[in-house]
Length: 205
Image (cartoon, rainbow, N blue to C red; front, side, top):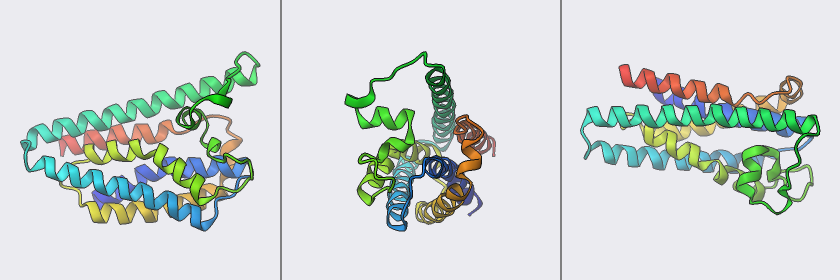
C-alpha cells in the first residue's frame, strides 16, 4: 500500500498548488467542486492503472518496467518544462514584454499557462461545471502517470488514496494560498521531480 500512498501524494502536489493559486486570486472552491475535481482525477487514475495491469498480462515484466520508467520520467521532465514556461511567461508579463491574446484561445492553452482560467465567468467561485473542465484538462497527467506507475499497483486503493489526498491538498492549498503566491514562482516542478524519483525507484526496486 506504500506505493499507492506515495503515488497519490505525488499527484496531489499539483492539486495543492492549484488550490493555492485559486486562494491567492480570491477564488473559492466549494466542497461540491472539490469533490468533482478529486472524483474525476481518481477515476482517470484508476482506469489507467487497470489498463496498465492488463498490459502487464501481455507485455513481459522487464519491458513493462522500462516502459513505466520512460513514461514517468517523460511526465516529470514535461512538468518541469511546463513550470519553466509558466515562470518565463510570468516574468515577461510583469515586465510588460509579453502580451498573450488568450481571449479567443482554447481552454486547454489557457489552463496550461494559468490554472485559474477555469473560472470562466469570473464569479470568484469555481462551480462544479468549471471544476470538471479543470479536472478533465489535467486528466492527461493522471492517465500517463497511471500507465507508467506499474501493473503491481492496486487501482482501487490508488483511486481512493488519490481522492483523499486530493481533498487534503485542496484544504491545505486553500489555507496556504497567500504564502505560496508570495513566492512569485511556479512550483509545479516539484511534482515533476517527484515523478522522476518515483520512476527511478520503481525501476530499480
